[in-house]
Length: 383
Image (cartoon, rainbow, N blue to C red; front, side, top):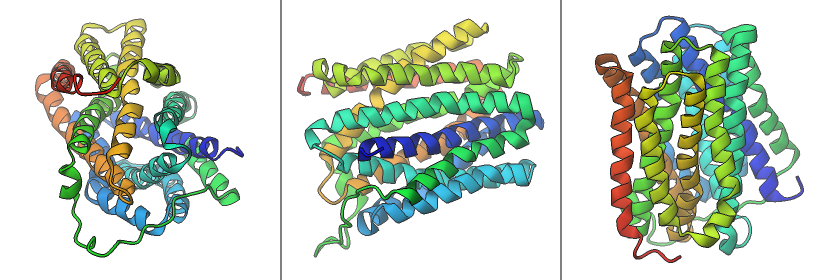
């Protein structure tokens, strides 16, 4: 814990575990209340609704005022948002909680990514983001397990109460120790009118944003569709949690290997392989119903999607103009949260009309098409 990077990763694991667990519990609580596929999609969309509009401004704010105070506030509101359905059960509470949880975690996500990019030698930035991604993989594994077993053992209401504990622990750590952070960057003369379009004019940033959004789409759809698919198959909440934890276990395994992989493959080679692997996994999902095969496909999908995030973050941070790294992360987060909003609503409507199998096939087509677009970067990327 004396190492600032380790401290940041521990805070990340605690907060993200509560966030991931809440998404599963919100979905399964709504399904238990006979909510429609579209309603479940709406709840998942609300996680990203406010962040979609304020993420860029949040990134600029972090560049301007620093990271520590926002981390304290977002840790507290994240824990409170998860606790809300335990204190006030019902569908209305799930809608409010989805907004509060999603907005709080978005702000914290930007701050923590900005902080990791700042820490240490820039030459080791890819390795640092790989370690952060490992932290997300650990919490992605623990969150579904906590949610699934808590629901089966003590019910949805107490599951929310248990899931609020990890973010509360993150708040306690931040109150105990203040991590190092980049100095606030006041706007320089002539920068008052700077625009997001300035960032989008940078070709390398544009590519990082595009493929980050595509990977986020694949990740968001998984979090939305697997609880639905598992419920349709009659699986218990704990079994669904195990299936989804295999996805996180795969992201942990592949990210553990990322420092070695980054010495032999460049970022775009990894991104292309990730898109192909993820597309194939989605194509196979509607063909299987037995739990061992669902676990295996979830693991395959986790290998694909999990390998791309550290590479994209390293590309993004390296291409960002000085003093605008937080804003660049904010743009990426805006795209991610647009995915949080659009994908559950769009595929929820598609699933209600055409069936869940159509959702899997459509996502497979997007990812495989993206791999074809990403190939144009291979010839120009350094090894």
